[in-house]
Length: 465
Image 1 (cartoon, rainbow, N blue to C red):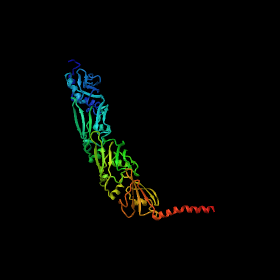
Image 2 (cartoon, rainbow, N blue to C red):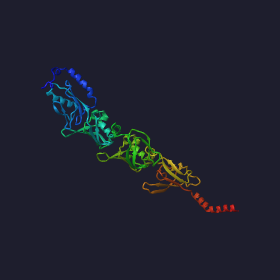
Image 3 (cartoon, helix red, strand yellow):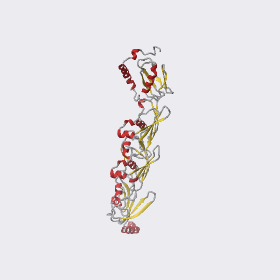
Image 4 (tube, rainbow, N blue to C red):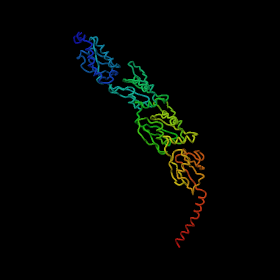
């Protein structure tokens, strides 16, 4: 063996203290980039090598070749692909043991290749994400954030990281992000490697107990962006709507709800109903349905009981929405007068409806009243009957039906009656109440019409003569 390849006895017998000092001397460089020890080498990486006691051995930086090896002085090619920096250091040191006594090789990653990661399933923007530096290689939750956040359909307890192996197989690593949220278990937030794929499966059943925890997670879907949803059934403005974070305020029935306050929370069912103009008087809020279409899997139907929200304060019923959701508000059957009155006062009902009171009242025209206000109250809101001209025994109620037809009926008026369908029905938006003339008023108006030409003639005669 040549003198160049020999290590002097004095160098070989240096104390461990000197080795420790040497190790500490390279530590700042090794920690210059985060995640270096976790980083896995691959083709394209540029590395810097040093051997303690042999400063002239490695005179340049080395690049990992496409075959996964690095070509080094005296020993040739050494396979390093798929190894961490620490593993590669040990492998290279082992190769130099036939040339040097106790060789100590250190490695620093000078320039990393572009690392490619993928995420699929229940995230806002699934796809591939290139990472150009090891200090930017994300963990599972950071990659989910890069992809726009996890959707409300994500099964966070069943995340899979698919990691390709050198032999061509794929290792499936389970990750339970729900444990991370509930228990702070950081081991679940796995550090990713090149070519890893994160698979976020769709849940088969909505977990209401943890829905608020999941929606508020740092890696949930971006809450600052508006979402597009559809709402059908017993609301005043059914159809597609764009929902923005924050609350909405519905002033008049049939108008869109206006944003009232900014928020960082995801839009919810009640906010969507408010944006769609509010519920109609006969909405069945006990059996609202949210139809959700996950990226992977069959559509899900989520039952929502907003009556529980009103009566028990069960906020889990007001579930957070995601883009593409459809809300169905069915029509109720057999609502009691008390229930209809209470529905009119909820926050996701319109504040007022328009009822047109015409005919023999003191102030005819459109009156704004609460939804489900009884007919008697609407007549009083228009100033009440004209005592000299009105037929106080009955009025005519004209209503435009959802199918475009018009229904009208005569209703006997009794101001002492409570809300009921026969004599004091609850009113709907755009109802028309016609207050007719009394029999005596009709006779007087008819007589006036008959005598009008005669009285007009006498007036003309007086003018001429």
